[in-house]
Image 1 (cartoon, rainbow, N blue to C red):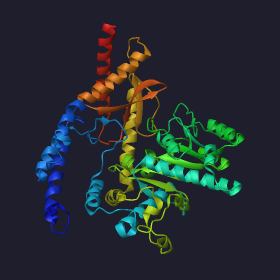
Image 2 (tube, rainbow, N blue to C red):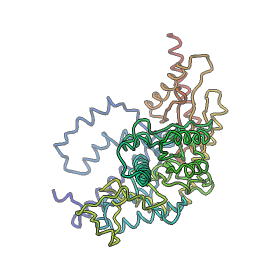
Image 3 (tube, one colour):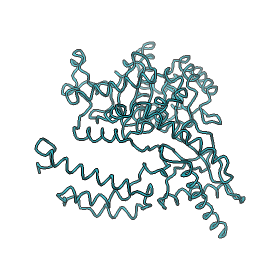
Image 4 (cartoon, rainbow, N blue to C red):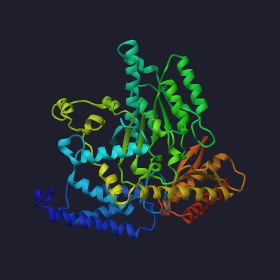
Length: 490
């Protein structure tokens, strides 16, 4: 069995196996005619369940043959121009190259003695990104598994800073003090804000949802009123979460106004830019993030708008000293003496211990393509969204919710015939499911004011306005068929 270990004696076997795997994936990508096959769980589950994991095949080629039937054939392919579903991007080749390198070397980014150069590359990329944000000379950060983890750590830091200030005035912090802490976020913010508050022991009422305007941006006037009410009730404005690219609408909250309120009320300002971080590299749209430089912390997901493979994300902070709230020392890993010795252990900043060298993918991307190259790709999908909005606004079959700031379109098929809103809901839901089952395209869905809507998340520069128009025709066809059949039988 030692022949399967990757080392100096098996380097040639490694080369052959990986090359065969790459060739198979390349052939599959070249031959893919749709984003999905339409396979159902009931059809695929028996194929996977039939694999006897206690009887190994003993051969990489045989395993790859089997992988075709259990995975590659029916995977959802984000590179296809008619994948218009969730916040999944096609990936750039330099990042995939980085993935291959990091997986083989298998560095763990918790301590210097496990990663060496990897530690310095991650730190350099954090510095580069905080520079793009404009967080200042004390800024720092750490790579994470994704936006949910980044948001959780940001609110952990906010909680600890708030309770530390309270302890300074009133003595040691008690668990009961947490009940006075409040987090403010727009009604369109990511669900991880509420999830994080629960995990941090703040209670179900800790997150106050601030309504949005017609462009789906947080209403700063309402935020100001809620902050004042919070203060009047003796509660503590722990944090304000501004979103730079909401999941449903791609909307960007008014960052300068929110920053001013955070300063006035002593609240930690966190900007969830998991989606909108691509603007940091945009040659034309960087101004949409004006005000982000005043944040205390920022979430960025490179695996959304920097075209990186999952996972590649980071939490950035204005004051690197606040990362101490995630620091614990273990004699076998990062003993306290290493701080005085100035040994750079990334575990001192992270919620994770063992952690992949995901930063290498971004490093390779920047070294091959450059930031402008990435930004130009993101600009292309934002331009495409503007074209898609024009198509939807001119099409009497559809109601489109809001003009996009980024690359998301939320819309709803509306039939010419007069039918109930509930029937329209069912027709849109059916159209999405039928389209997915056909394998011709993938779109997402959401609800707006309780009604069922559909969603294009445009992150593929290869997608065209013609693709959007074709998918709209397919959706209308499925919806019309559903309404025709159901109205006849009603």
